Amino acid sequence: MTAEIQNALNGLGQSTPEGSAEKLGLLIDELERWNRKVNLTAIRDKQEMIRSHLLDSLAAAPLLRGERVLDVGTGPGFPGLPLAIVQPERQFTLLDSNNRKIMFAQHAAGLLGLGNVSTVKARGEDYAPGHGFDTVIARALAAMPRLLEIAGHHVREDGVFVALKGRYPADELEQLVELDLPWSYAVTELDVPGLEMGSRHAVLLHRAKAD
Image (tube, rainbow, N blue to C red; front, side):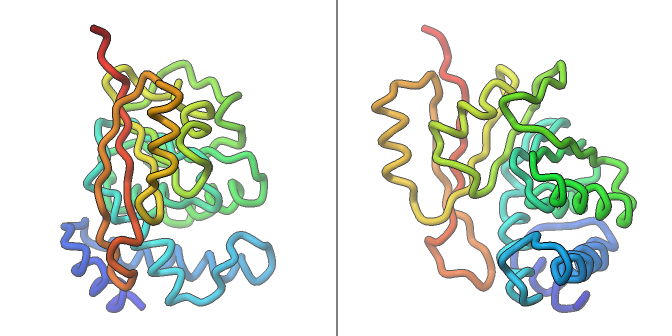
């Protein structure tokens, strides 16, 4: 599996630290093992886990900014754990209200020796870390207006909210405009090896500058 994951990483065109493919393979092995006993993800096949969990997460790596990253609604640790493996210079906080999923994320971070990961069991609305984050990222959690309600306040003044979506989210973007929320946005298409072109997008949200 290590060679297969390394080939997939090469397909992403990203440079990664030595040993990343091995750690990512261990993460998938452990996810599959836990998933047989505890329902963590509807995806059961390892090959599909690589595509839809690992590569889908890592496609967002170039979009991260700053030192502190908050992964809201991380579930069993995606995209936060793969991103923490390939970007050890950043500090990742993985946040979820589901106890069994955050327990797995905590276990996996310890197993993989990820000293740059902390896990928190809480809802985004209730979490109070006492500081903002340079990047807040969320994957398939909620529509964007609701996402900003849940976690927009965790983004530093000059930070970025990365909302990972499937196909181009035209309806959600229209809602943002209609609600006249104080955020500007840009959309970028993500190329995920093994997934159809145009099937993954990221919306980069920044606080609108005051006039």
